[in-house]
Length: 145
Image (cartoon, rainbow, N blue to C red; front, side, top):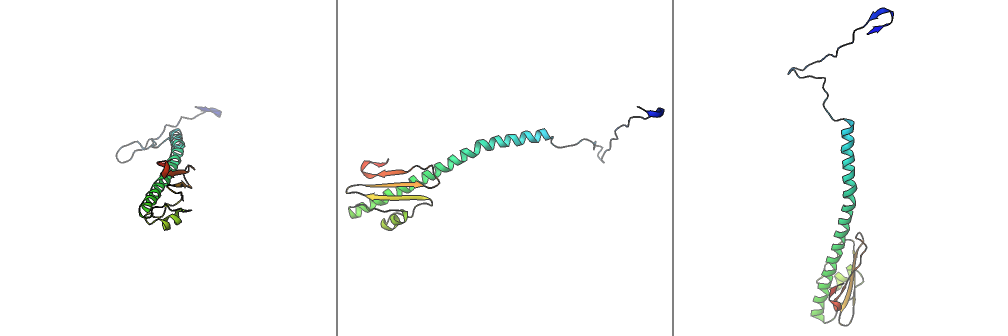
């Protein structure tokens, strides 16, 4: 390479250094920025798919809990009917647990109520974190509606 005033400079050769095993130390090991961005994009896509599915699974689980508590309430109502030949009304899960000896308290977040009639009863259940569906049990119409 020629620089002004007639001075010639020679291009500098890269200096290679080696460790004690004789391996080249100038080679960098690691990931490029593009590789890292691709991985982050893939993780973002998977998260965008998984999070809504997870929310739906949770709602279905809460709804199943409400149904399960409703079936337990219906079983306790029928057991009470066998002993007393009448059904009990209760406005909430705590009142049902007190009025019906075979019924334990409802799961957390489940709202229950039962209304007696002459020869049948109806009960409803819903979960505050579920899909918002209210499940109904009508013993005169065959159970879960």
